[in-house]
Length: 68
Image 1 (cartoon, rainbow, N blue to C red):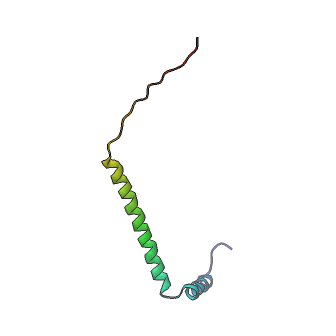
Image 2 (cartoon, rainbow, N blue to C red; image 1 turned 60 degrees about the vertical axis):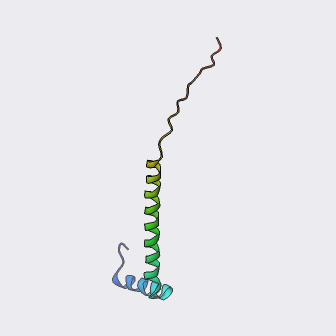
């Protein structure tokens, strides 16, 4: 019950090929790669935008309203 035999993997491969066809799998993997590249580009753009902007340093004075 631990690992699958070669026959299990062959049956899974045949089912996947029947569902998606030969041409769909490379197209699907290309779309996944484009998505990953877009995600990485978006992350570096966010980092570059935050590095370009100067930080606004504001101080907040705390005044306590103690009633004595």
